[in-house]
Length: 316
Image (cartoon, rainbow, N blue to C red; front, side):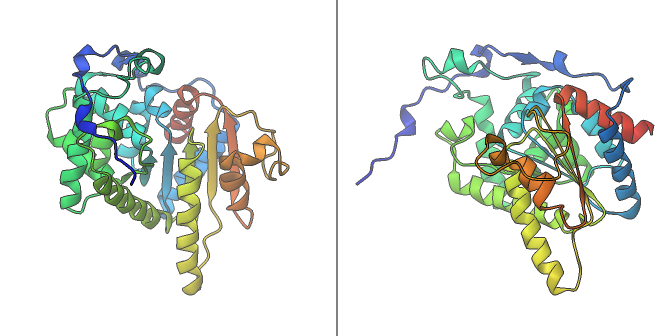
């Protein structure tokens, strides 16, 4: 019979003993950009139209968006009513939580993996307790985390996307893969609680996506989570729409990443090429919008694209 690893043997240290690679100094001031990519300007116009019509605008992200220090731009878009839903992976929650709690985040994998201390930090493990308590109240992961930060003692909560989303009543859905986040290492991690909380968030996300006709779905830097969650949710909402005599096909998708793609991304990369397996391209830019939607790809860092998009949306 297989033997499970005994987590009680782990040594979990306080965050004050960790060397942090990022501080709140990385957060950029809210100020317009001098130049805006033409594609981002086009998407910004679709976002304004979506707000006017009541269609959904969904911003999906990888954790590097938070590490890029563009929180103030996303928070302002939320406060002005331009965002219907944020969606991220578990690492988004970790970096947001640590910034709000101690004003620092990010450890050196190369440094701490050598002695097995990577990820094993006491305060960050509080996220496991937040999720375990949240599922008892039928909360999704994002709501539980946002509520904890918004209502608890977090000296830098004004920087938190989760706390802001909770305060404004905007879903921030968290889509985890068990074993992929540092808090899954901890002795207090309840995999069943995380599974329930994340699946609840998947259903929240799908509910928002049901209103995507005439709206916008964006992916900043998520190569796997965003396109895969979006794909399954889109199938669900189109299934229901077809039974009700409706269509969900006229909307806009945006992918911002560092992958070097061709100028024209309206067709898939050749099967067998490395680019064919880049899911944001074939899933978000081609297959799901080829029957009436439109798609845009911008190759640049998040520190460039998010402020430019904010500039185009809010400054016209």
